Amino acid sequence: MNELKLHVGCASRRLDGYLNIDSRQTEATDHVCDAGAITISPVGSVVEIYSRHMLEHLDPNDARATLKHWHELLAPAGMLHVIVPDIAFHARQLLGLECSSLEDQNLHAFAGFWGWRDEARGGSREDAHRWGYTEESLISLLTDIGFTDVQRLLEGQDSEPWHLNLIARREAATDLRQIDAADV
Image (cartoon, rainbow, N blue to C red):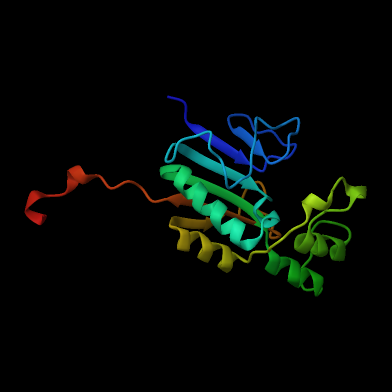
C-alpha cells in the first residue's frame, strides 16, 4: 500500500515521495488547488502533510479552515509538519535584540512580517504574508483544531530560531477491541 504524503505550498520546490501541491502551476507542482480545498485524497487517508512557509500567506480565518481540512485529511496518528516565520523572533530582530545569519537584519525582520515580495528577490504580490505566528499562538491554534503531540523542532533543517518549525499529529484511532465488556 502506498502511503500518501502531501507537500502543500510547494512553489518551485519538489519533494520526492510527496504529492507536490500549490495554488500556482510551477515546474514542481503535481496538482494545482487551494491548500484548504484538497480533494484528490479521501478524508483520513494521508499519513503526512508537509508545508514550509505557506500558512502565513493565508488570512487567519482561511488558515484555520485550512488546518481543519488538513486535520480531516490525515489518517489517525498522521503527522502535520508546518514551518512558518517565528514572528516573535522577527520582532526581537527588528528591535536589535536578535540576529540571524542574513547580512541585513532589518530586511530579514521585515520579510518575516510581510514576506519577500519584491521582484528584485524573485517575489511577487502573491508572496505577501497575511498573518504571523508565535510558538504559543500556533500551538494553541493546532490544539484547538484537535492536533495532539505538538512539538517544536530545534534540530535539523529549518531549526534556526527564525523558523517556527512544528510537528503535530492527528489523534490516533481508539482500538475498541481493548474495551473490557465489564466496563461497558
